[in-house]
Amino acid sequence: MPFFVVDDGADSHPKMIRAKNAAVGLWTRVGSYVARQLTDGHVPGEVAKMYGSAPQITKLLTVGLWHEHGHTCPRCPAVRPGDYYMHDYRESGNPSRAEVLARRERAAAKKARQRAAQTGSGADSVENPSSFGEESSGNRDGFDDETDANPDQDSDESAGHGDVSPEDSPGTSRARDPLHSTPLLKEGAKEREGSAGSSARAPKPALSLIPADWEPSDDDVCAAQLARTDSGREQLTADQVDAVTRKFVRRQLDDGKTAAAWGGRWRQWAETERPEQPAAGGVVVPFTSGAQPQTKSQQQRAGLAALRERLQGGSSA
Image (cartoon, rainbow, N blue to C red; front, side, top):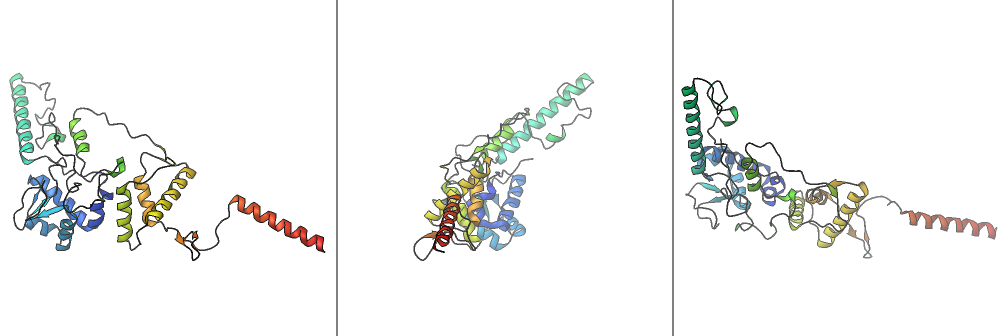
């Protein structure tokens, strides 16, 4: 059966964050329906209303995950009145109806040849070791393992999350590290489908300490600001983003943490961080309650001052 491709970075994509969980659930469920029914990304209005609510549909249209009749996206086809279309469905690596049907025809022809060879020899053929004359359980739906389920496309955009969708803002550029891939990853699907017959997997990225001059990407900052807004927190200023980043880098280095990429961890940190606030005299003090711990040098200076006071008091007596 065909699959609806969803990338492992979809959870942190700005469109997904703005859509919220309920609408994303509708997007995923309808994506499964579209892949199974081979609609090439078109969503019947009756199915959308059966699976989700009107506010959820509106949310998907607002953030640009779906299009409706009369949309202006140059990459997506026209939509019938009352129906919808999943943005960049084909560009994300989802196979078309014609490709799936062609694979099924090739698989059926291959199965016919195997059965004919088995019947002619009176014994199991080398091609089909199964004593029941059927395809293995992994290929019962008529897919030809010799073909790539997701052929390469001309565009490197991901369905539902293209960077130049009319609904997008300049802050939704493609991420710069492996944790910020777009929600529907064409390359990952190609790697899974194109490596049929081989059990080898791509090596995992090497873990390393965070660089002392590490900075978050624009996508990281955008996602953190959106999450803060959704949770009722004020957005960070540019200076506060710098301060939060310095604190984050120091903590990772002090703790000796290692990772392949740091954007996702920084976003989680920045979403809940209470930034430093300026005091009345213009001095920036930590936005926390209670006495702050002194540094080692401060403690030494305080001890010397106390010793000096005791000595002066003894001499005057």
